[in-house]
Length: 316
Image (cartoon, rainbow, N blue to C red; front, side, top):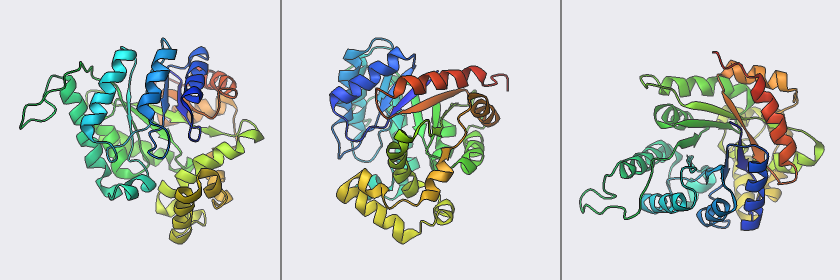
């Protein structure tokens, strides 16, 4: 069940359609695209993707509970389902510090706000009103979608264990993967079944990917645990500089400020499928996702991910 996490900066609708088509042809099960308020609207782009594909699951990867009212997210999801019946998912994350700051929110509020959004989507799909007091209902059919949560903070990882159908491990320092999975597992205690773990390992397949990997490192440097940031030589002042540069001049400019140690801890030097499968099996990961940096590079990366998945131990 290989997935694709779109990771193109400010993509046009044509860009996301091309990437989604490449993902579908390459045998990917799902493809998601970022909901960034400073880029083009993801839900409109997802409609274009839905119309241009026939089998792949589509959804935001990720949206957040801050910058769009939950009612609008419910309506957008229901509308997308009309164009991609039976093949939509809802991807949710905390949104990153650069998003919560703009929204005037503390990241400490992220688990509660995300929980409220997920519970609303599921309640409406089960026939409950959008708003209990007035009894206002959604006048569009909504099917309960699989919920995919991407998390780096402990609170969001615990929430993912409690509520998610799938959890995406993406942009997490290699040394923190085991601890992260343990928090997710503890969060899922008492559930009939734990969420599916999906890992999107960052691998330097070739040198041309360095700028794209640096873009991922920008967001990881801002949202990883403080002890990791300090270990990378990225103190609070430098983190603030990176955030300001990201907002002022964009990802490529902010990437110039990211210490090389960040990449060293995020990107796996090893790309041997057997070794990656061994790591995945040790984490309890059942499937992989690959960052979708471009339609041209995606087929090779999907082929590699399929090889890894075929070697993962699914008996544990």
